[in-house]
Amino acid sequence: MAVYKLKTPISEEDVRKLKVNDVIYITGTMVTARDSAHKRALEFFKEEKPLPIDLQGLAVFHCGPIVRKEDEKWTVIAAGPTTSTRMDIFEDEFIKAFKVRVVIGKGGMGKRTTEGMKKYGAVYGAFTGGAAVLAAKAIKNVEGVEWFDLGMPEALWILDVEEFGPLIVAIDTHGNNLFENVQKEVEGNKQKIYERLGV
Image (tube, rainbow, N blue to C red; front, top):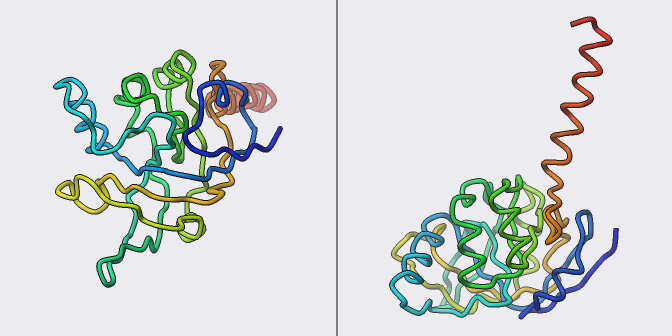
């Protein structure tokens, strides 16, 4: 396990050095995007329309933040991760189209995303669920918001973050998926327990 402090824009070369169980902290620009934003972004891509922000080399956070506006300035109050499996149907195409380098969320992602990360050069950083206030503390500024018509949790929030983390690399560019590894281990142990119990 190694600890890396990454600054956006993050290069493909930098993420290909990372391995499952490494710890990363991110400084720079991070964008929130849940299923509605993923869907719209990919529609824009197919229609050859530019996105309101260039995502290349950035971190994308599966998050529906709670945000307050005071005197025309937005402040993030809480920024807990969304369960990432919701984005599994979009993520490989999203990484391919926009060259994002880090995807952040909770609960992991499946085989399709794992293959996409290996092929196109991205990692999945797992953030602890329930630590929404901790996440908000690393957000230094809200640079802007796009697609607010999708609603506050689904909009693209453009955030300036400082040492956002710790994030555990749970999927790397070598095809390793921590969640799948743990699942296999659990299944193996379950079998041994059944045998001991004579089930």
